[in-house]
Length: 170
Image 1: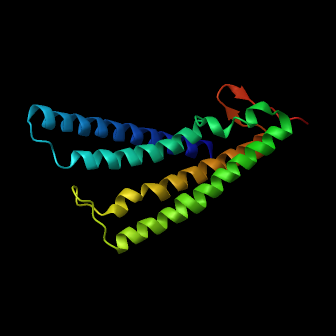
Image 2: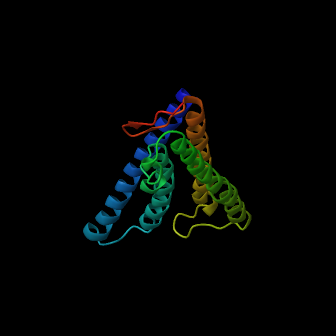
Image 3: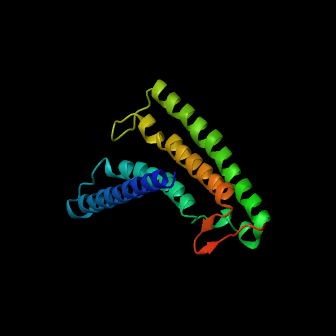
């Protein structure tokens, strides 16, 4: 599970880097066409918005894996031993349930509705369902990471967060 998680996270980080590079090029092209050519590109603003959605949501799952969300461990960081393990498991269960019901199931419904209604983006003329696919994808990633953290907590009796290791009390 460790190797698979590492592969998923590596692919996610490379994909996020690629999306960031594309958005930088997109915005640079927008600036160039607007101020140098005096004829703004018609698609760059919409593409930047879509890329920002994907970067924000996928970046949230990456931040969850790296424990970069401040609010997730603010309570747990003050606890030790078994209490810490219980709180860690509860926090990850809450994240798992949110990701399952809101992001995965709700996202799949949204994608289905937008494909059914054949919603097309105005400038890029792509189906909006492709833009919204990031919701269930992010939900899957967060569910996987939450399960990974829960299993780590139960199996090892500790969960590594940054530089602090929590060691269980016998």
